[in-house]
Length: 139
Length: 469
Image 1 (cartoon, chains in turn red, cyan):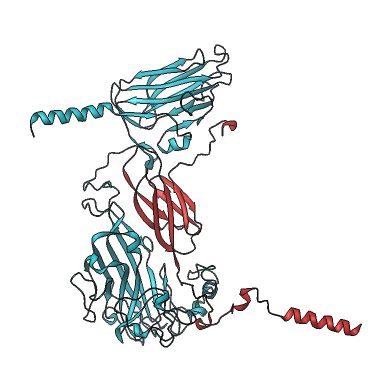
Image 2 (spheres, chains in turn red, yellow):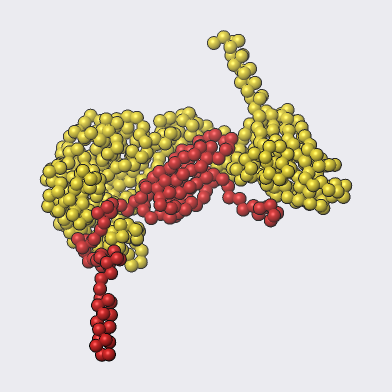
């Protein structure tokens, strides 16, 4: 019985001390103390900026004048501007700080926050419509 | 041109104006789409229930109140006297119209949103059949046309369809809260109104888009020992820069107006700074102005560097000439030593023909060393210029492999330069970046997946004593 218990203990210790090679995090020095100890992917580009794309969907309006469309970050800093017509679809590409999750798109009085996913966001000129003026059954 | 020709042209123009017609059959099927064109709906939707014609009509809620009217209101229109408004309308489920009456008003609404003229007063429905409104407008001016269903009791609803008005043109501005469209002058005729045009008298330029953001400078920070690894304090050469992209009305870049400022020289090897546009041919540049050059590079007649296939603009070829040392060992990299103010450098690159934003946005600011013009240091995986000494690739600690697009990385994938999208508070001399920015290692080792804001001044992000400032 003692031998069995001892064997189980040894197996248990061996299991607990073994390296979990299936978890890549275990193979990285998570606390490098200087730059040369960093372990980074060969494909890492070291960029602190990202390219963002906003797909702008035009609307069928009779107003054909050109307007300036602005893209702003959460601190209301203008990241990009373009000339647009509200009737036209546009693809707006720009570079800004990496990691932005939300942007504000503004064209005159039309202003919306848009969510960013994988560097891409969508925007249209449609007004927000909460349908609150309609009878509940008609919403 | 003969007088008769003028007369014919004038008559044709008048004829066109006279035929101007504004219509809406509500076949968008979505009131929000029409609202984007400045139609207003109060208690009324667009749907296919019992449509008058086509698939959709407007359909009010139960018009059972004399005061809370259900409205469909056109955008502001520039209406000529004698215009004719037509539309179809009806009452759905009329029921007992004598006991539960239903009415329709048509009103012109002025630019202040007030009722100005009643065109149809309390049209009274007697049955549920489709009615054809035909109203001649005696007034001229900028008005909305409001059509209002209302009544008393019951549950019947009002429908409107196939709205049309002759001799009227659209005069709303969806980008200005649907207020009346202001006739904006456009002095240079580029299609961008003077109020929006940063260059109202220059048809080739319309506005400015800034990098990295309005009023914000980016920083590029170098280690200058390449191809050998350095001490990674990233202050051997620190350059702040801000680019104004000057664009035309077609969103093409005409000029790049850049401000550059050499903030620190924490080493002895840096000679100069340039900007490389790998997607733009050198010949596509018509001129460059403002460079601070002191004979260490050779430019072509257009201001780009000679011998380059792509546009390379040397901003400054001798950093010593634009920094102003005030004592101390290095320049602005050792805490406690006197701080110098450098000369600001403004360089304007003008293109022969406007270029796409994507091309102009693909650039890298690089440095070159005193040891030779060919000893360039770029951001990782940014290709060198044609004048780079490629014999240094793969030597010492460099693991550049041009064939696979790998540039300026060590065998362990470490860089010699970093770019920040804001002004970078670089480390004090010999202070390792990892020990200065406490989230940097996590950012780097996650391939940028975590702590993308590692460089910001947030709690527990920095070791302040390790910063130069």
